Image (tube, rainbow, N blue to C red; front, side, top):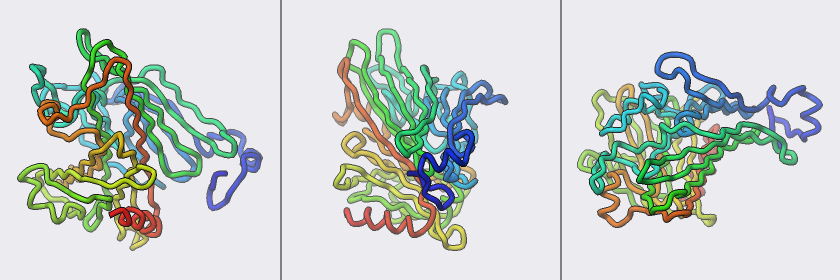
Length: 361
């Protein structure tokens, strides 16, 4: 039974009050029409709780803009959301079309720094975030007393004589709730073993990220990626005001899962709204996504914190292979992932979840 505007209403009670459920919650397909974004298909989802987000159908079904009662949750990158034709796969070219957004997909065969792996040149973060979805299905309907909204589609990362991986993605939200669930299945539909790297690049921005905001995670060990991040280790979970010329700091977290096998990470700003507070969380299964990468970028204009569950680190495929940690999918083999992203509307909600997280460590 959904809660809407402070009331619990049955399905019948709600249907007596509206002529079309789209008055309260639903999904709308649209197409962007200007500049390099022209032609990009999107699906706009709204849940009736004040939570709304955009699925970028032509950008790997990433999550772009996301808001809660009009307040931005996600950092939006300077490039906007260019069409896939503008993708530059070489080197750091991925950054020229990096939209930011609530979640940017990285993979399916390469994550992290550019590298050369077995003679193949690989660019930053791979191709999946620039592959348009096929067989898109967006709809909503009742499941008992719950009104469920979903968008699903398939992206195929393939090349003649090489890998052939299929990502089937379903994004689910429920009326009255302020969260979304990403359900992914990656399958090797080819005839040869294929490398598989996967990272969910969740990007939180202002006003959630501001001076004094913090990261709360069930981390038992935190390691800086490099010498640039080392001086910031003691303050990795606290965020500063924007700084021109800030050099990104990246940290690797070893985390502890709860009794159900999930890791939950919170980004909290307790001083927002005159001390009422505001936050967001990312929840995922540790068995499939054993790595947690924190991207702390306090730069002027590029002011963002990335919470990034992954099945790999971010030094690139060649480094992953050299460490002996590169996941290979046999023909017909599948991997399933579940990532939940949600809103914490005040300090009471932040504190309740923070207590659960800290109890694990």
